[in-house]
Image (cartoon, rainbow, N blue to C red):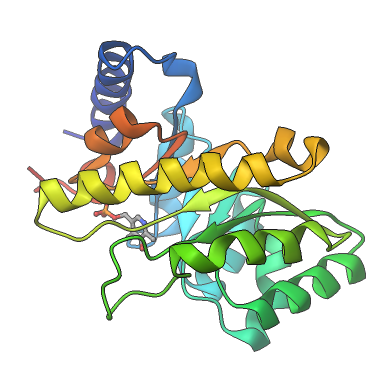
Amino acid sequence: MGFAERYETTLAEVERVAREAGRDPGDVRVIAVSKTVDVDAVREAACAGAHDFGENRPDCIMEKSAALPQESWHFIGNIQSRRIPDIVRCAGLVHSLCHESHVHKMDAAAAALGKVQDVLLEVNVSGEASKDGLAPADVPAMAQVCAGCANLRLRGLMTMAPQGDMEAARAAFEGLAKLHGQVRSQLDPQAAASFNELSMGMSEDWREAVKAGATMVRIGRALFSDDFK
Ligand SMILES: *Cc1c(COP(=O)(O)O)cnc(C)c1O
């Protein structure tokens, strides 16, 4: 099976799961996480109809977005302060903002480039010590900080669920969806209107995420790897 077949199968499955959950399948976007593959594989994926790609390293998003500038590029990795200008230059959406100093640096980098950067706040819903992300209790204040930045547009929230425990994953996704609603109710109407994205779910757990309200699922291995089951 090649990318095209896996992509088609996955889209059909996303549509089915969304409908079963009473959701409009058009409200769920599949981000193809291309971090493990080269530019040629991304080009093949684009030919198969995928146009949103996720990368977790600045060097990789720079290389691939330069080769394929017409695609939408998502930065989903750890943010290092000194790489913020590089990330802002390439990314349509940054999923992984979670430090206040980075919020201000990203706002300044976007201003310098004359752009408004779409961002999500990454939340550590499950509270695992190994994970990056804001504690849920800190999200409302950080959302207000973002709302005060002229060159950032806060689009929603992102999380990574605990691996290998579907019950825990479900709880994390439902927790993020609930938090999203709470935060949105505290934003002014204009900010609330564009605060409508929930980036959650990966190869193993995206079905649970779609059921819980994901608007973006970030799928890597199930699309790009031959041996993902
Ligand atoms: C790698 C990665 C994914 C995709 O993971 P798969 O299990 O390969 O689908 C999604 N989100 C983030 C933040 C990642 O780093």
